[in-house]
Image (cartoon, rainbow, N blue to C red; front, side):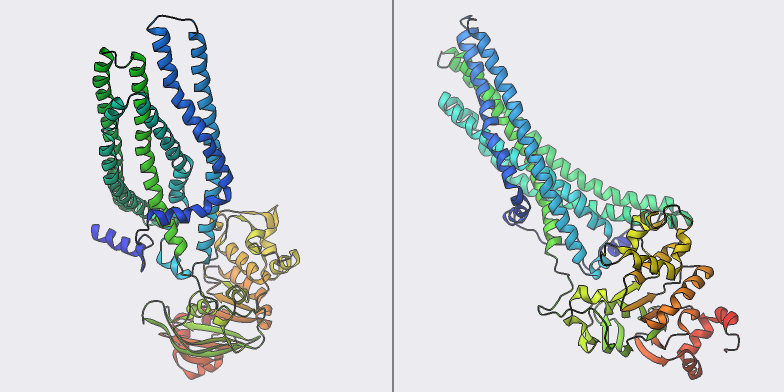
Length: 609
């Protein structure tokens, strides 16, 4: 069981673990995060301007208490005491109002900065190459936009400015204590070196513990996302108990990491609390002796104790906020690492625009491997002319689907050239290049929204006429006739409220509505029933006759009318010709027909051997 879990974990990590990266200095992290804050600097400045008011109103309260004790309680003189009580009430209410305003301004600015951060991370994810998503589990990437950003949110909203406010308060208290009685002040400050030493030690411990907790939480999210996606499979194969045990193991890893972090956090707070209590006890012991000798008044001693408590309250808060800051820095490391990823398909500085296919697409001695030199394509050469329809066939793993991933530059080749109208595709603008193609994959993917949104995908150039035409061609209008809201029919996550055939027809409509120069069908009818396939085949056939297209399919009905059929075997192009030509050659294609398409041939071409 443990070995299986370790194997699964290695699989989730992939070739490059999304959580494996070097530490970044605090200074660099702060500088990188600052760019998200700067647009809202005036809101933060407004919150900062309220800090001295909060500190001043907090510091004046012990002084009012001292006056009340020395001038009213001890001499038992109550005249003017009411005004002191009102003054104390005003100071308390004023501190509350200023602190409330500071909190509101901080929250507003912080949330806006975090909104920009989420957008920046998401936009960067959209630019990353497909290979990155193949290597890294989606659950971990989701953690970057959720738990990591939330950790930074807490630091921005209640961490940084609170530390500044506590620091201002501490400076004010130090000055007041030294002015009131420098001897008592020195007694209070005797514990400060110890506090600084403890904070320094716990800084590294907390950062390391929080980093580990974030990594294990990302693993937990990844497992949860994978399990939720495959829940039907889990239940079909009665895998619930095994899945629960595996999840429990991953959860236990996170629990142990959380224990370590919580342990250091609690220890830091407890140590600060203990040291502050010792300091208060020293003040009472030393101050009581001075009060007995009339060196200080009772009011001064009481005020000193109040100031000392106010001195250690910020320190206790700082220990908690310090934990928050360490948590934020650990999360910021992960976000900065993601933003620094340069796994973006490179584009030449002088890249050319392209809007149409004028003559041909050519693969010229193309070699390609996903990893090292495990070649998926080996010295593949062929030419696709404008208006021509070719089909790709071969055993699983022969490299058929790789063809279109290379054409659209989801990956780049290692050797050879891919030319469009005689120019290497690496010399074209990536977005322009991809707009030439419309791809329909085996598993039609739909987004939450409505049918119209899934056809347009935000392309403003697609008109209602384009949508209507595409729906008519693929027969989607007949399906939508069942629904009152038609194109506005709600599509749930991944189209789970629609059948596989309905999802695929919507994907066909999406492809055609984009008016592509080249239409690519990659096993596009594999998951539809015979009736739906016939509907699609009949409707799309006339467009394929006039449309430059590449078809990857196992079903003979989809490929037998192609102008040329290219047969791939172990990454090599071994045969090329029409359906009849290849059958007459009695080569690999003929064997594939007999082995894999026999049942279809019995109903459509009984005379073919």
